[in-house]
Amino acid sequence: MSVEAAEVDRFLALVAAAQGRDAQLTSIQAGLLVAAELGIARDSRTFARMLGIAHSLVLRELNALAEREGVLQIVKRDPRTMRVHYTLPPRDEA
Image 1 (cartoon, rainbow, N blue to C red):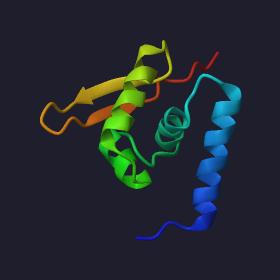
Image 2: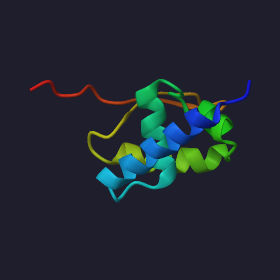
Image 3: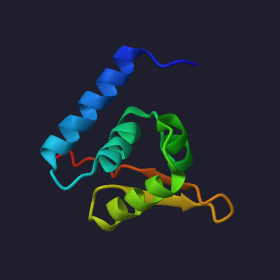
Image 4: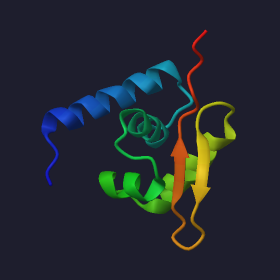
């Protein structure tokens, strides 16, 4: 299945906007957050395949994000495949 150029452009624009809001985010970290928000990918392996990057790079960035308080939550780790499932924390509705 091919991805439309407009969808790619939208994704990249959202990644850039996330980095604009938080200068500490790498492009992979911002991509992980945007992918979770859009429901495109909620695990490390899917994200790595979707973008054609090494799973090990995604794992490194995902673990760095998980160390930051309130950014994302690791919900499951598969020790056999190294796949990490993650979700965004619930938004405060105050």
